[in-house]
Image 1 (cartoon, rainbow, N blue to C red):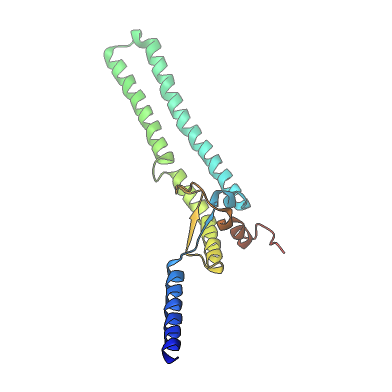
Image 2: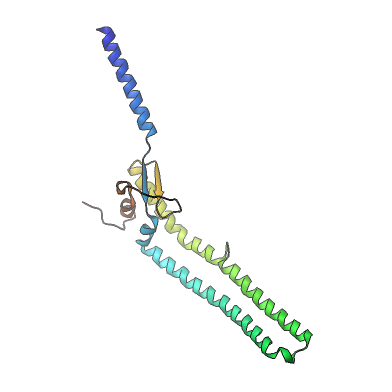
Length: 180
């Protein structure tokens, strides 16, 4: 009898240990759609409009410089016969400088680490931080180990809607009425 009860206790201890190991290895995943969440945030729409307006303004400046260079080139072609070779070279140099100015402006505005990039970062960082913090709260509340973003470059071929925590993040951001 003593042998049977110690065997049962040993079996119970082993099964409890195995179950604990299985739970330790099981990790909980969830996913959200950050694009959808951001689209529900009024401040995000406002900032995007501001960036689009700035983009249009910068584009206008660059196009103006490009048009000036093209106008100068057309004028040179039209009057080329009247100019000496030195005058043609000088005019061509002016055109090249205007084109370079347009290219420099374009790079300063739209290039890597350009003004648009910096402005986007400045305006959208607080909103993305707010989204990140709300997502972190949802993960902690739901005891999730990992949260994936369907809107990111990660390829999620299929995701079970049961693991979609987008609505929870929207609730945390107070962009959705909590269900009673």
